[in-house]
Image 1: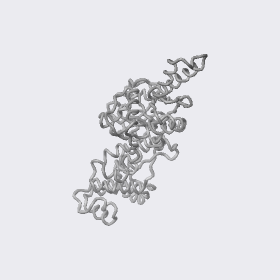
Image 2: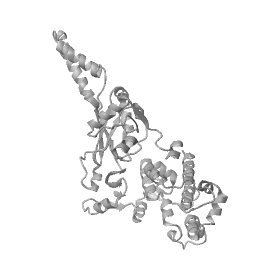
Image 3: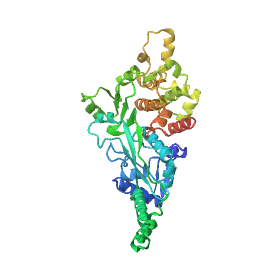
Image 4: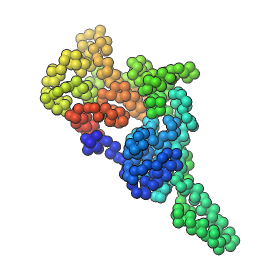
Amino acid sequence: MQKLKAANLYRSELIPISGKLVERYNKCLKKLGFTETKLTQFSIDGIGWSPEISEEKKNEHYLCNGESNPHGIIISPLQNKKPVYLPYHTFDREMMQLVFKVHGDKINDITRDSAICIDFDQGIDTFYEPLDLLRYQIVTIKFHLIDNLDHVRAEQLELIEKFKIGNNFIDETLQGQLLESAQKYGDLRERDLNLRSVNYVTDSFYTKAFGGVYVLRDFISPIIVFEDTRWYKEAIKDTIHDVFIFQISQPELLDKLRDHIIISYDLEAIVKTKRYERIKKFEFARHLKDTQHPIKAILNDPLLFKSYLNKVDIETRKKVMSVERYLEKLEKSNEYKILDIVDNDLFEAMHEPHSSLHPRHQDLIWKLLVNISPKDVLFLYWYDKQEFYKLYEAWDDSLKDWVIETIGNNI
């Protein structure tokens, strides 16, 4: 990952945490029912997730109390507008943006000497079966302050009111209580520590629950797509819900998405795009072995590309150039079917969200498409960084250089 880090393409916007903030973070962990971290320095993202603590606990989703109870931690106003690097849901960053939009000023004040624990409550205490995900409607975002600072403020105000009554101002016990509270928590009289709950309304989304599930319910009929085969097999036993259920590798999935006007393709249009060039080059790179030139140079230099294209076996040539071959043949005759010539994997990669979709839904469908066919390295990086990082590790060093350059030129 060093090359990605050097290019600022690997978790480059994390916030460093040390000193007093570590103590506050641990108080949040305890309040949420988790064990404290032993680290004295770490970094966090916009929702309070830390890659270092994740590694320490050997649990990527250590801020979740089961699949139905995700949490967040705010210990710095710098978390505002920061990325959420390992979202449990595709709408996690939107929820954090809503939190700061509603309570930004209060968060700035509270995090001067406290921290905020967040409970994302969707009204489901625990999941029992995969289609429980259809019950997601409104997520109520609830806030809890460490040391119960909001309650302490209320107690201070009660003590002050009691202090004002009669001769209570000479009561040494009462004086001691006020002094002790002020020394421990500061003067909270003028602080606004009340963070009302915020509602976030869900529509279609992706969740890490049940091994990864897409819930598409804003279209003709609800469609549920499972990444995990075991949970897919469990879900299809359901006889109650009127939904279409697919495993992500099923060929019928793309047919259904096209039928529901969720995705589309236009081969004549896409071959003229940079996206097509990225897909074709990446596919070609997968077939290059023991080259005399760096893969980066081969993919960037048209002469070298053509030279090596003529060196690989005929089946590889047909596969890499299958879209262009099909369009050439189509000009002469319309008797050809796409999959008679175009490689199926490449054909899947030619799809895109339908232009009629809302931008938020387009982002979700892009994520689904790059998971079905992860051949556009730029869109894979944009829409599923975790999958990108996992695949990146196995690539040739020279291919990594080309990928980094490709992403860098488009950011």
